Length: 108
Length: 117
Image (cartoon, rainbow over the protein chains, first blue to last red):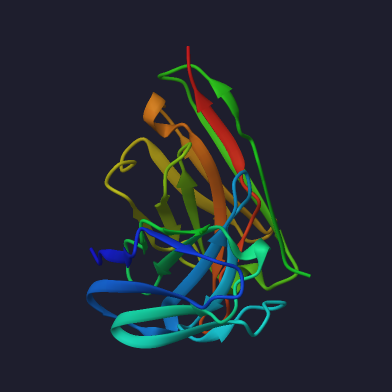
């Protein structure tokens, strides 16, 4: 099983700042099958990035994904109030699919 | 427009059964692998089961292997999850997810299953 470890657990930032979230895998992940999600309380996960770096439909370009192998990064270039949420990474290239434990981006 | 609509959730007593359904539209369902993912209250996301595009292969998380069965009916664009011997730990929102080669994963809005006496 591929274990995904996200860091930091919580990121305290101010609106306008840049957020950098990390997702590290215990073994190599195919970039084709690495995704990032945003989730707000009471809502379903919202797909932001798939294939490690492709933005999903309707996702603004302030969100970007990068990385390969075992290290992946989600960057939010300038935080807006609606971006404060929990973010998960996921690999779905091998069974079992696995998810990171999440990074909470909170208002400082 | 892609849509995945789950149904069948509700409150059920421990030890009883429940069947979830997920109706797909807006994409070629029969070409996509389909999964169930769940999220217990206040917890992270947990993959539950996966079925290949043609139904020939099934995979399960260790936590549900045995009591849960995933299936699909491509003629009805529908995915199922039969859940038997339910336990309190199975309480969660259950999402269906579709994946195809090179395309983004598609998620439904989820259906809540509560196992309680």
